[in-house]
Image (tube, rainbow, N blue to C red; front, top):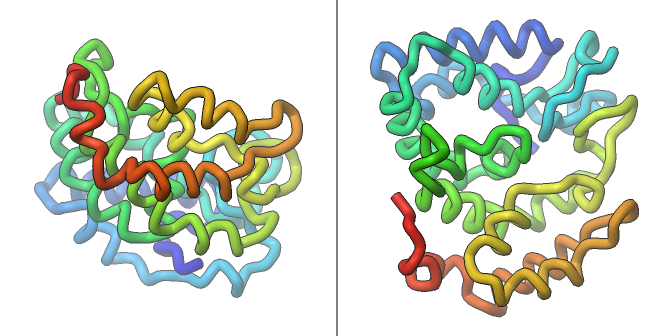
Length: 221
Protein backbone atom coordinates (compact mmCIF):
# COMPACT_ATOMS: atom_id res chain seq x y z
CA UNK A 1 0.00 0.00 0.00
CA UNK A 2 1.27 3.44 -0.88
CA UNK A 3 0.95 5.88 2.02
CA UNK A 4 1.95 9.56 2.31
CA UNK A 5 5.30 9.94 4.05
CA UNK A 6 3.78 12.44 6.47
CA UNK A 7 2.46 9.53 8.52
CA UNK A 8 5.58 7.38 8.51
CA UNK A 9 8.00 7.45 11.43
CA UNK A 10 7.76 7.49 15.18
CA UNK A 11 4.65 8.74 16.93
CA UNK A 12 6.38 12.04 17.68
CA UNK A 13 7.51 12.60 14.09
CA UNK A 14 4.06 11.78 12.72
CA UNK A 15 2.53 14.17 15.23
CA UNK A 16 4.92 16.94 14.11
CA UNK A 17 4.06 16.37 10.45
CA UNK A 18 0.34 16.45 11.21
CA UNK A 19 0.76 19.80 12.97
CA UNK A 20 2.48 21.10 9.82
CA UNK A 21 -0.48 19.90 7.76
CA UNK A 22 -2.85 21.70 10.13
CA UNK A 23 -0.91 24.92 9.67
CA UNK A 24 -1.29 24.62 5.90
CA UNK A 25 -5.00 23.89 6.31
CA UNK A 26 -5.30 27.00 8.46
CA UNK A 27 -3.78 28.99 5.58
CA UNK A 28 -6.51 27.78 3.26
CA UNK A 29 -4.92 24.83 1.46
CA UNK A 30 -6.96 21.69 0.81
CA UNK A 31 -5.97 18.45 2.51
CA UNK A 32 -4.96 17.02 -0.86
CA UNK A 33 -2.60 19.96 -1.44
CA UNK A 34 -1.12 19.56 2.04
CA UNK A 35 -0.53 15.83 1.68
CA UNK A 36 1.01 16.19 -1.77
CA UNK A 37 3.96 17.99 -0.14
CA UNK A 38 5.05 14.61 1.25
CA UNK A 39 6.30 11.79 -1.02
CA UNK A 40 4.45 8.49 -0.91
CA UNK A 41 6.05 5.43 0.69
CA UNK A 42 5.29 1.81 -0.18
CA UNK A 43 4.45 -0.05 3.02
CA UNK A 44 5.91 -3.26 1.56
CA UNK A 45 9.35 -1.64 1.71
CA UNK A 46 9.06 -1.60 5.51
CA UNK A 47 7.81 -5.08 6.48
CA UNK A 48 8.39 -4.47 10.21
CA UNK A 49 6.25 -1.34 10.27
CA UNK A 50 2.54 -1.49 11.06
CA UNK A 51 -0.36 0.64 9.84
CA UNK A 52 -1.99 2.33 12.80
CA UNK A 53 -5.77 2.45 12.30
CA UNK A 54 -6.44 3.52 15.89
CA UNK A 55 -4.10 4.85 18.54
CA UNK A 56 -2.84 3.03 21.62
CA UNK A 57 -0.28 3.98 24.22
CA UNK A 58 2.52 1.47 23.93
CA UNK A 59 6.24 1.19 23.30
CA UNK A 60 5.44 0.68 19.61
CA UNK A 61 5.23 4.46 19.27
CA UNK A 62 9.01 4.72 19.58
CA UNK A 63 9.50 2.64 16.41
CA UNK A 64 8.76 3.62 12.82
CA UNK A 65 5.23 2.89 11.68
CA UNK A 66 2.53 4.29 9.41
CA UNK A 67 0.53 6.22 12.00
CA UNK A 68 -2.56 7.16 9.99
CA UNK A 69 -4.76 7.84 13.00
CA UNK A 70 -2.59 10.72 14.23
CA UNK A 71 -3.95 13.19 11.69
CA UNK A 72 -7.52 12.86 12.99
CA UNK A 73 -6.34 13.29 16.58
CA UNK A 74 -4.22 16.30 15.78
CA UNK A 75 -6.89 18.07 13.74
CA UNK A 76 -9.60 17.41 16.31
CA UNK A 77 -7.42 18.76 19.11
CA UNK A 78 -6.05 21.84 17.34
CA UNK A 79 -7.50 24.85 19.15
CA UNK A 80 -6.78 27.10 16.15
CA UNK A 81 -9.90 25.67 14.47
CA UNK A 82 -13.44 26.27 15.65
CA UNK A 83 -16.24 23.81 14.92
CA UNK A 84 -17.28 25.56 11.69
CA UNK A 85 -13.75 25.45 10.28
CA UNK A 86 -13.27 21.80 11.24
CA UNK A 87 -16.60 20.84 9.71
CA UNK A 88 -15.58 22.57 6.49
CA UNK A 89 -12.25 20.71 6.39
CA UNK A 90 -13.88 17.35 7.08
CA UNK A 91 -16.62 17.90 4.47
CA UNK A 92 -14.13 19.02 1.83
CA UNK A 93 -11.74 16.11 2.50
CA UNK A 94 -13.88 12.98 2.73
CA UNK A 95 -14.41 12.46 -1.01
CA UNK A 96 -10.68 12.69 -1.71
CA UNK A 97 -9.78 10.37 1.17
CA UNK A 98 -12.26 7.80 -0.14
CA UNK A 99 -10.22 7.39 -3.34
CA UNK A 100 -7.26 5.65 -1.65
CA UNK A 101 -6.74 2.62 0.58
CA UNK A 102 -4.90 4.65 3.22
CA UNK A 103 -7.69 7.23 3.10
CA UNK A 104 -10.28 4.51 3.62
CA UNK A 105 -8.45 3.46 6.78
CA UNK A 106 -8.25 7.06 7.99
CA UNK A 107 -12.00 7.45 7.61
CA UNK A 108 -12.61 4.09 9.29
CA UNK A 109 -10.80 4.75 12.57
CA UNK A 110 -13.24 4.28 15.44
CA UNK A 111 -11.56 6.48 18.05
CA UNK A 112 -12.35 9.69 16.20
CA UNK A 113 -15.94 10.22 15.07
CA UNK A 114 -15.53 13.64 13.49
CA UNK A 115 -15.30 12.17 9.97
CA UNK A 116 -18.86 10.88 10.44
CA UNK A 117 -20.32 13.30 13.02
CA UNK A 118 -20.81 17.05 12.73
CA UNK A 119 -19.25 19.29 15.34
CA UNK A 120 -20.62 19.70 17.89
CA UNK A 121 -22.00 16.16 17.87
CA UNK A 122 -25.44 17.42 18.84
CA UNK A 123 -25.82 18.43 15.18
CA UNK A 124 -25.98 14.76 14.24
CA UNK A 125 -24.28 12.57 11.62
CA UNK A 126 -22.12 13.95 8.82
CA UNK A 127 -23.83 12.42 5.80
CA UNK A 128 -20.93 13.08 3.43
CA UNK A 129 -18.56 11.37 5.85
CA UNK A 130 -20.72 8.29 6.36
CA UNK A 131 -21.16 7.97 2.62
CA UNK A 132 -17.38 8.24 2.13
CA UNK A 133 -16.75 5.54 4.74
CA UNK A 134 -19.19 3.21 2.99
CA UNK A 135 -17.95 3.90 -0.53
CA UNK A 136 -14.25 3.70 0.35
CA UNK A 137 -14.71 0.37 2.10
CA UNK A 138 -16.62 -1.03 -0.87
CA UNK A 139 -14.00 0.16 -3.34
CA UNK A 140 -10.84 -0.54 -1.31
CA UNK A 141 -11.78 -3.66 0.65
CA UNK A 142 -9.88 -6.10 -1.57
CA UNK A 143 -6.73 -3.96 -1.42
CA UNK A 144 -6.91 -3.81 2.37
CA UNK A 145 -7.68 -7.51 2.79
CA UNK A 146 -4.51 -8.42 0.89
CA UNK A 147 -2.26 -6.56 3.34
CA UNK A 148 -2.10 -9.36 5.92
CA UNK A 149 -1.26 -8.83 9.61
CA UNK A 150 -0.11 -5.26 9.19
CA UNK A 151 -2.85 -3.33 10.99
CA UNK A 152 -2.43 -1.98 14.51
CA UNK A 153 -4.94 -0.92 17.14
CA UNK A 154 -2.91 -1.63 20.28
CA UNK A 155 -0.74 -4.21 21.98
CA UNK A 156 2.66 -5.26 20.69
CA UNK A 157 1.82 -6.74 17.31
CA UNK A 158 -0.29 -6.27 14.22
CA UNK A 159 -3.36 -8.10 13.05
CA UNK A 160 -5.27 -8.75 9.86
CA UNK A 161 -8.27 -6.74 8.80
CA UNK A 162 -10.56 -9.25 10.52
CA UNK A 163 -9.16 -8.16 13.89
CA UNK A 164 -9.88 -4.44 13.43
CA UNK A 165 -13.23 -2.84 14.30
CA UNK A 166 -13.90 -0.40 11.47
CA UNK A 167 -16.29 2.56 11.31
CA UNK A 168 -18.12 0.98 8.38
CA UNK A 169 -19.87 -1.39 10.82
CA UNK A 170 -21.38 1.53 12.70
CA UNK A 171 -22.32 3.35 9.50
CA UNK A 172 -24.29 0.40 8.12
CA UNK A 173 -26.13 -0.36 11.37
CA UNK A 174 -27.08 3.32 11.70
CA UNK A 175 -28.47 3.53 8.18
CA UNK A 176 -31.54 1.44 9.00
CA UNK A 177 -32.44 -1.02 11.75
CA UNK A 178 -33.02 -3.78 9.21
CA UNK A 179 -29.28 -4.03 8.55
CA UNK A 180 -28.32 -4.57 12.20
CA UNK A 181 -29.09 -8.30 12.19
CA UNK A 182 -27.16 -8.79 8.95
CA UNK A 183 -24.10 -7.08 10.43
CA UNK A 184 -24.33 -8.92 13.76
CA UNK A 185 -24.02 -12.21 11.87
CA UNK A 186 -20.65 -11.03 10.52
CA UNK A 187 -19.11 -10.40 13.96
CA UNK A 188 -17.82 -13.15 16.23
CA UNK A 189 -16.98 -11.51 19.60
CA UNK A 190 -13.38 -12.11 20.61
CA UNK A 191 -12.52 -13.88 17.37
CA UNK A 192 -12.85 -12.00 14.11
CA UNK A 193 -15.03 -9.89 11.87
CA UNK A 194 -16.08 -11.31 8.51
CA UNK A 195 -15.46 -8.24 6.38
CA UNK A 196 -15.91 -10.29 3.24
CA UNK A 197 -19.55 -10.78 4.25
CA UNK A 198 -19.91 -7.10 5.18
CA UNK A 199 -18.56 -6.21 1.75
CA UNK A 200 -21.18 -8.49 0.18
CA UNK A 201 -23.92 -6.80 2.21
CA UNK A 202 -22.84 -3.42 0.86
CA UNK A 203 -22.71 -4.62 -2.74
CA UNK A 204 -25.78 -6.87 -2.75
CA UNK A 205 -28.01 -4.28 -1.04
CA UNK A 206 -26.69 -1.36 -3.10
CA UNK A 207 -25.96 0.55 0.09
CA UNK A 208 -23.60 2.99 -1.61
CA UNK A 209 -25.89 3.72 -4.56
CA UNK A 210 -28.97 4.08 -2.33
CA UNK A 211 -27.34 5.65 0.74
CA UNK A 212 -29.04 9.04 0.54
CA UNK A 213 -32.41 7.51 -0.33
CA UNK A 214 -32.21 5.08 2.61
CA UNK A 215 -31.21 7.79 5.05
CA UNK A 216 -33.35 10.67 3.76
CA UNK A 217 -35.74 10.54 6.73
CA UNK A 218 -32.89 10.96 9.18
CA UNK A 219 -31.63 14.31 10.38
CA UNK A 220 -28.49 14.40 8.25
CA UNK A 221 -26.53 17.61 7.69
